Length: 156
Image 1 (cartoon, rainbow, N blue to C red):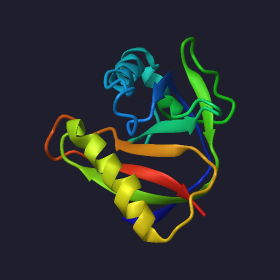
Image 2 (cartoon, helix red, strand yellow):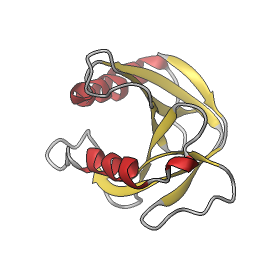
Image 3 (cartoon, one colour):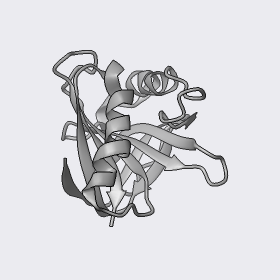
């Protein structure tokens, strides 16, 4: 666990509406992998960033009781025009509590439970308005037991 400052960024990616992973009965475990598959197959390779970062950007949908807009994508420059089927979302600058998920991506739900149910409450930090993030390293295999990624909770 650590706090991290994220600078403002523009993300272009594949959108999907889902229920939070915390809503086990309503969560669709295939929705996010399907969005990433579409991203990898259709995003212009020439537009990939020079760094190895990719983002999952989750924004709660007001009045939906647990539904999120999730965008699987990468940072692009201001003024970028999203290809058909892709959307742009801005990550405003701010502080985030980062909890690291380690191991195969199939264990992500357990890491989310730990991040939001244990680590965040014990941190003494206050959540702020803003998107919740997943931070991926594009060079790592999410199906590997050595996989790591960040779960980032917006905090004041």
